[in-house]
Length: 548
Image 1: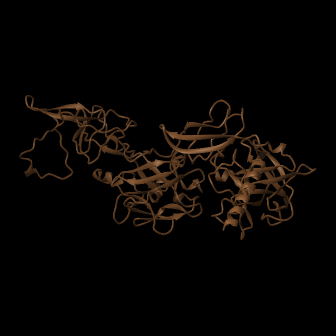
Image 2: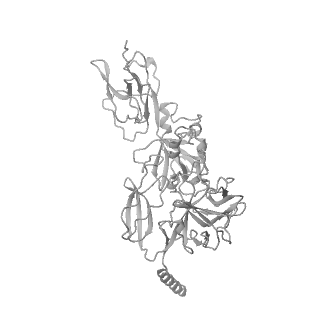
Image 3: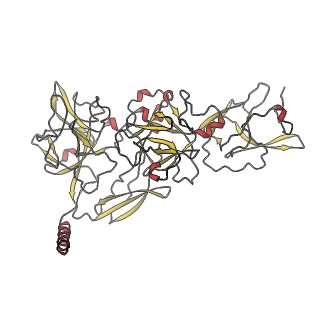
């Protein structure tokens, strides 16, 4: 036993010494222009395609890996993580050796001695022991790569796999297109050189914050006196600004991330004032399903379910909130206190009480490449709807068919689906509803009375002069003295709605972000039950004076 310990100590000492003599290698934080690639140097390759990005936003681009292959398709599988390799220590499986040939074509070699091949007559593109010569096509900051021609068509490296396989949108392979094609599947590439980090002793750590609360962190190696590296590991819909100045040494900086484009408002903690909304499955109004609080099914059965429940008093069942943050995930909670919890088997969800295992309650939010066919959406405001659409995947599982199928709810269970599907999208919408007012040609104004079992207020988008009023009985004049309510009406409080312009309705919202306070002096009490005329003997009844 003593000899074993001595030998182990010698080995540890050897590796410590060897480690001190071996320079750390890392990927540059800035891309090498494709025209400046150097033969024999190693690079990490960032790959993107219009099909998997929104417009010209390639923030969801991924790094190309040769470590994980799909044998049946013989394709090259890009890095399937939100991890950003720029400025990070070199990782096995993501480094490619570039050779620049005399005709200015390039070859790409893996760390295990294989190559991206030349294109075959049938397309394809599995790794090979024989190198293919790739021609670089200028696409601004990016380049495309072609591997030959067939029947007067150019064979481009594409990202997304062939159309026959709808689930492999993350595969790299060849496909034939007309020369200079701009098809959305054609891959675009950037190259990040592997650098010797002997002088790289500085670690820059970004603490990401929302409203001053730390929600995530990102550490990256950086060069002295260079600009701060680009913030990485940011979730979908979240951006961050590079700090000003240059790196002066190992440092930590707090960065308030930008969530202005997030698809919904959320609370960081359950104790925060709720941001209520309607949770709907599917984007188009024609296919939309409204999620609700029910013991048998959590989607309303009505066809083309509107945002509003058919009875105002039932709206409370349709209110949801998101609690958490984009980095760790969210609890998707109904006003009842129940939420979506990871199913006991598989990666779906059940609607039930909060799990004691905190991670079971957390769902990550993704966007960008979730709309497979926007032609399915016929709403006039479909651009706005698509920008707000998102999919949910449990925080502890990987990609694949692991995204909740918002359109395939069975009772109180939600199965999983694939990422690119209109049927897999959710929307979280402002819980607005309309209350009609009583109008009459003999009246100078329109009126209604209202009491609801939840807080509410007038929405800022209400375009008419209808207002809410509390009321108190004036015994002297035997009238109701009304006082305008400017803020939030508390649950069960009665109010009068009045419009001097005789508006036909008023638009209200159940998302009363500000805390409700009692309406001082208000003597109006609401009821959700019908009162028989014979039961009004101890009630004071008011009516509108008839105007002749």
